[in-house]
Image (cartoon, rainbow, N blue to C red):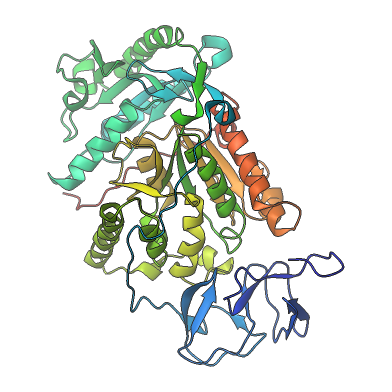
Length: 515
């Protein structure tokens, strides 16, 4: 990445097998770049993150990046040419999968090396990194009331009331659902929020006549009474019984004040890092995401797994083209085959609506140098590090094992984060190359930039700049350790940028028709 004089090269070759390199900085037409002693003259101006051909590539020949195929040439390409959507296309043909052939053995840290964080031990054994009172709507019809209740208590905080705050969980679902998979998925998602480790107590608000009935969660139709389930104090209010919007808001405020008194008795205690369940996500990606931020997060993921914790990789559309890497490192054949089952389910889901894998990446991804879904996925799965894949979970399914696991979520960020959180993630790390401002109501989200430009431009949103890797100033290992250390501090109470800005996006995945 540097020449003999120590200067940082304007391009990066990621694998000796690659027939492309990536522009680290703008490359001008006619500029000479040197890769492993091989000189190439740029035939046109190349923007940062975009690919330059290192060798002649004939029509139909494979294009390699990360040492893997990212597509095939649709016309002859000369050395020094810009490689993007105009001259290569995806190639999903001829795939053969291996199962558990490269499953590594994880060397665990001892307890002292792994260390601890200060968390909230719940009665059911979960450990929270925050202590919120959640006001959860059962449907869109009660979402306004839930939001109003939390807004009236917006000044509740740790210093004033001994809790992290009162947060609303509004959404646009809960009615007009068909019975079956779609309804079950919503119920699983809402239940995941009720019993989330970061939630100390819950007020549920319903209209009264919706499909998503409040009695499914609190086990009683006598609303306004307290219910303890799985060690969680839950209170319910129904608008049609309470007298409408204003009266329900007033009653909800009174109920939440009682919940605050209950939750303020809960205190942080020393907990092992093995109790961290980390969700990983990437949004607004660019070509540097797979070079800096994602592999650095993968390094932190490996450290967490070695500490006995759990790291969740999601976004199934952004595994397409890299799924063979996951099957190889699966802990056993059954887990590897489950990866392919989820990929096939998602492909059928897309076909039902006339979609395809390469509808992702987005225009912004492509502007940042990502040509197709295979290239995007090869960089995206790097968030999962290098340890063995120990499990595959449905959307919002409770993650009940340690190690590196996969969850079936869309690539759409707010829906993906909602599924990961509902699965029990008490921390989330989110990488971005184009810039993203998303957060979550009850889970701290650490934002990691893939390049220094966006880290500077969106400094209000970015917690960690992994762009220093691209700049040649730090290593993947160093930034990965920084992410791991930041996870520990945030889990102990340090606030992230998205928390300070108040980002609280909650969007359940609706997969069925609207009735």
